[in-house]
Image 1 (cartoon, rainbow, N blue to C red):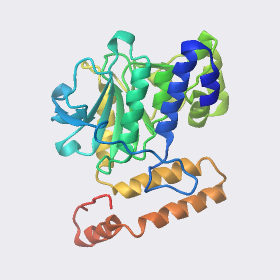
Image 2 (cartoon, rainbow, N blue to C red; image 1 turned 90 degrees about the vertical axis):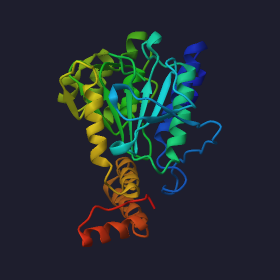
Image 3 (tube, rainbow, N blue to C red; image 1 turned 45 degrees about the vertical axis):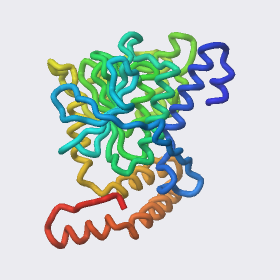
Image 4 (cartoon, helix red, strand yellow; image 1 turned 60 degrees about the vertical axis):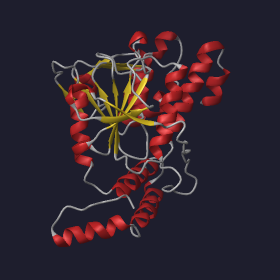
Length: 310
């Protein structure tokens, strides 16, 4: 796909190639430690690229660490590490209000860097992808669970980014669809592959051929999103639901979460017998971990486990 996109003429080809690289980066399974033979691994980034600073969070949430030494109002991507009871949750906020969050070369580059850095950060448990621009989502598969919070428009590349996430939640007023055929092109960031896997081939073809746009309720009815909520006055109902889900994930063993995701993702691409073999190999990776022993000890002592991702 990347080669075909690169061959397209002019700026469109460059943009599609960049988006394809982002999709490839998002889809690398687990990074250098937790992969099965033949898996794609992510690259580690140096501290010069992944600088972590502190920035105040919007909406009254605790102080969070952000992408770059300080989070500026004109940053196209804001990466926030939540703290206190939300520690381990990272929020990727798309912030291109002037362009309705459409992809740019700079945004694709920043997303790719952020994804690569998060892959090697063992403290990260769940990633939420959301929009910092009210009413628009557009823009993860990462080794950890990823949740797309759709509070506004998610058309074309925005929906493709959401499809790369493990779970999608939407406000009832959200609008989403793969509309590229209206422009005489096709979804080139994974849409033709991920949408059929999410909702089935026949319905995916219908939506792509028609360039139809769905609201949150319609998306829930076809299985495109897992949860749909009435929008609130703040315009962040889907984000709040994504936070609730991420908090449910936090107490679980981080190694087990990563390996479970790997087993599911790779198992879905093969026949059942091969999938069971993949599951067995993934299960074996959890046996020698300190977290497994901690889980057994915590169960015996009737206390909450203290997992360290080891």
